[in-house]
Image (tube, rainbow, N blue to C red; front, side, top):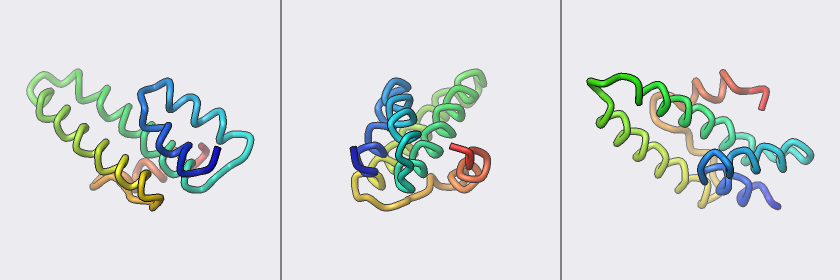
Length: 96
């Protein structure tokens, strides 16, 4: 599986993310690692947002928009960070 495919698979629910992580662990690819970190951050962001009642719906819409931006970047094969928080995700999860 090439890096672009692993990056796209990482966007498909938690199961896809785990599959991309396992496949990427044996043969590291920079693009796949980038999107694995982005998606872990986005999944955790959406989980935290879901517990805040006041901004719950707006948070889900923002998460969806961020997910679409990330997926488009993965499909195009370019490392496109999620706005505002993507650089933090890359720093926090650099071990992946």
